[in-house]
Length: 156
Image (tube, rainbow, N blue to C red; front, side, top):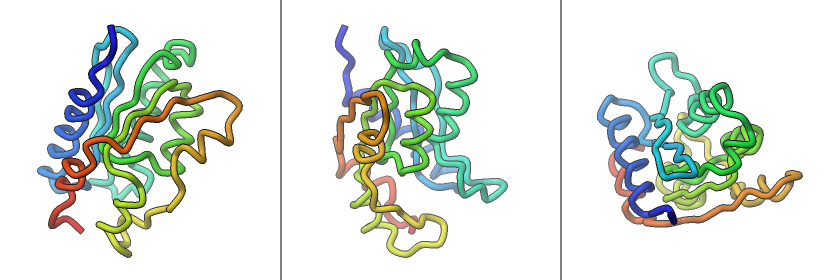
C-alpha cells in the first residue's frame, strides 16, 4: 500500500501546532511504519529545559532507535513539519530511517525566523547531509510548504 505523504505530513503539522499551542517551537515529526501505521510522534522539546538540541526529529529518532532495529527503520518514513537540520538529518541517518518527507525547507525557515537566538538555522539541506553517508536515504520535500510556513506566523 503506498503511503499518503500529504496526509501524514499534515499529521506532523498537527503535532507542530500542538507544540506551538503549549508555548514551544512549532515543529512536529511522526514515524510511520512500512504498513502505514503511525508508530511515534514528537513535538519540539525545547521547553521546559531550553534544550537547544530538543528538535522534534532528533528526539523522535532517539526514541525510535531505542525501540526499533535499523533494519526495521530502513523501511519506515520520518514525516516532519520542517526540513531536518544537519543534527536531525544525522540522527535520522544514524537511527537507520530509510525515507524522509518534510514540509518547510530549511532555507524558507531561515527567512521566517531571521536571526532568532532560539533558531540559528543552518543553511545545509538534509539531502547534502544524507549524500555524505554510506547508505541511501530517500528525501521528499518540500511539500505543502505554504501550510508548513503558516505554523510559524507570529512566532519568531
